[in-house]
Amino acid sequence: MASRTQSTFSPPVMEARRWIEGVEFPANLPLINVSQAAPIDPPPENLRQAMADALLDSTTHLYGPVLGLPALREALAKNWSRHYETTVSADQIAITAGCNQAFAAVISSIADQGDEVILPTPWYFNHKMWLDLSGVTAVPLDTGADLLPTPDAAEALITDRTKAIAIVSPNNPAGVEYPADLLREFFALCHRRGIKLIVDETYRDFDSRTGAPHDLLDQDGADETLIQLYSFSKAYRLTGHRVGAIVTSPSLLREVEKFQDTVAICAPQLGQKAALWGLENLDQWLAGERAEILARRAAIEANMPKLTAKGWRLLGLGAYFAYVEHPFADSSADLAVKLVKEASVLALPGTMFRPSEDASGTREFRFAFANINADGIAVLFDRLAQLDWPLAGPSRTA
Image (cartoon, rainbow, N blue to C red; front, side, top):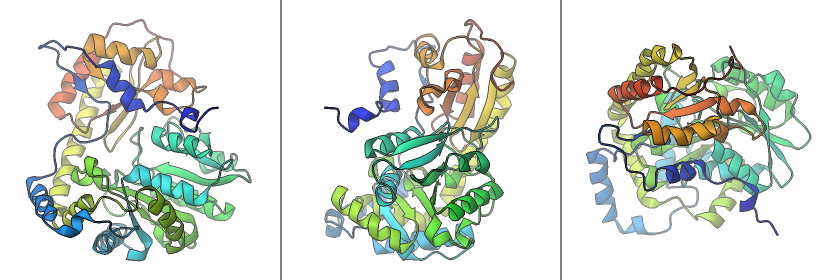
């Protein structure tokens, strides 16, 4: 008998890590790892000191409230209100053990086995995996040359089993930032059809735009339609401490509480206290982190002509990601392994972000630049420009 875990694929990042197991990279060609969008640098020293101090607090080692520390929920509500230029209250906030758990909690709270959730492609693979594990059908929503979906195409996919459309903005893996008017159109569609709009804003803090990225919280019906997800992992380098959040109606959070209580009881206390300290003390530091990511984005744009001359195309760029189309005859699934062996580059192929029947992924790669600076980006693009593999015909979007 097949299990739920057998209904989905192996974790892509873990699969990619196996490609470099036991490989010794030459001194003149060290590994460039652009496979994962998780910062490897530790939190800033003052935050680590605050975390060390928190370990001396006996409450850090106890179960906490299922929906999160009240002080953290209140602080995030104030932060959310300021960022989106609206009013959000603490009872609209739940704290989870990472943003992946936030998505899992939401899906478990709104959908049942046999239901459907629409995911734009290329999709974030962990969203697809959780839907598989839940017995919920992931319905792929194709995107255009700009990697942005249209509400009309989404509406054509809605059935009586559809429970939500799930969007990531800024996008993982494509990097694209959804325009405010497009998000408003998706919200209107979801509200009219009585389904949820899930907006995963894990990379909110690295959006290139200034001001509120959208006004969805101020739309009529937001309370019953909108669900926002967030991660402290990227903002404060707390990936190993697992702190995420859900922003939605208090009534839905009562359902989320059931999931949380049976899965994790509460998000880790140390991570929550770290996130709270970050919200209260690290605005200026986080602004510097954003500036650095935007500088790396600019470095991608500056170096892209090296690849364009060789037939590559930049499809999407933003947050931690450059999503590109390669010019070669072989599938990116095979070329990703060759990249490790021949160029000392570890990257994820587009096949990991699309349904198996979607051939577009065979021509695509995601390069995550969370851990590679402008100089490293130049080296990466030099290596890619030197690849001399058999070429394919014209691209699907040329």
